[in-house]
Image 1 (cartoon, rainbow, N blue to C red):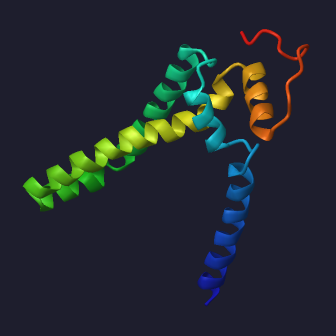
Image 2: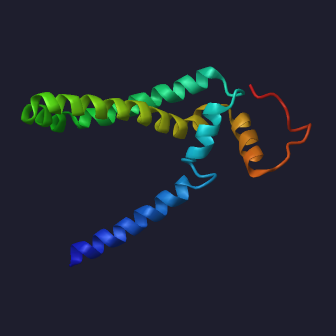
Image 3: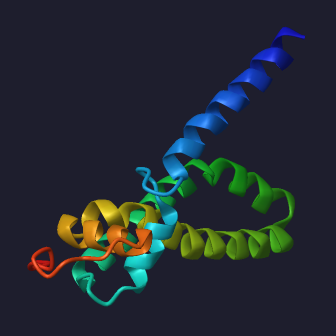
Length: 134
């Protein structure tokens, strides 16, 4: 009973903290990161750095899964290898883009991120605020 209460309360607290960080303007604004990935004004180097960091993050997470994957490959030799290859491919592709888009607002030039945030919020950017984005 006590564990159920702790799990329920802990889940609600974790959801509340994550919701505040993931919402618009939070530290992990996924929609802003995806908009930055699509935007042509963001330097290619910043995009590549964010995607490389995302790929490295997925590789670290994948390293923790090696014992489980080895057990699956041992238990089901042919099928386990196929499942492992498909799941790893999806992890590395989707995970690198998701982590990269979360990290891109922190890697891209701050002025450009602020301008894109203002454009997304519907705030008009005046001529004096259109300074250099480099």
